[in-house]
Length: 319
Image 1 (cartoon, one colour):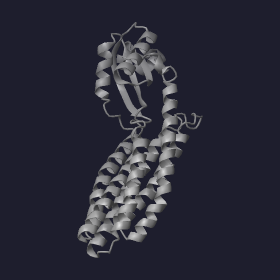
Image 2: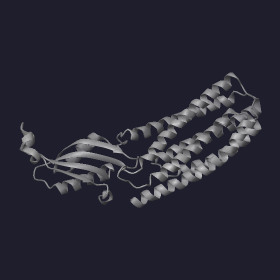
Image 3: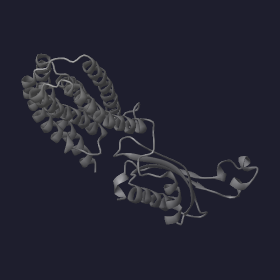
Image 4: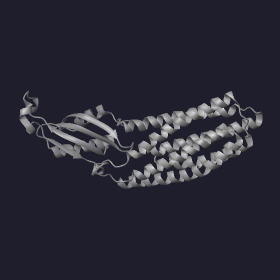
């Protein structure tokens, strides 16, 4: 599994680097084309490509940085850098939507002449580049929020190019200028929907939210049901470093006389096989009369014995 993670990291980096080179290279041509034609749709697309280049550079840097091993100050390593990059990319997309809307409203109130021919040529070339870049990212790691964030930027570009082509065709055929800012507003709405979802998902992970599909109550009920040695599970906390790396910590109360090591192995097996959690911190407790006594404090450490287990190092031996 470690090899698979390394392969995914390397593949993601390569895809992001190719996307960065193609996007950054064409951005210059699109900026020039937008200025020459006077098209807001084209300039919005060019501005989006500018933020794309920055977003792709950030995503690529985050992918490289996340490979660094953990140390005494960052015991979980640098995996969260990818989520932070996705969050920043989501916020920049939202900012871009606001800019496009403001500019579009200004164009609707004060129409500007547009050179449809130049606009359509540049937009068509931009569409081809964006299709290639989107394909590169889309076929990458689907669970990687960093890749998804970068792909959303490029998808917004692709839609912007389509809008610019349609607007150019309408202006060329009818001379109706408002089509340019109107289509820009439509694309802004589509971008906003995806940007909000990306920002919300990445913020949820940064706030240590429980991963989608993992129910704390289900974990609390399933372990005692499947393992006779466990009478109760409580103090369950579920979070994730990235969508592909869920984690859990919990306390499990054992039936008196049960073997702690066997119970520990069984609990880790249920977490891994049923819930897909291979990184767990488990505290085992054995109750006796002291825990139910009003004077339990006087019983000292004999009242409960606890064993801590960190299964990350051997997380894939229970599959």
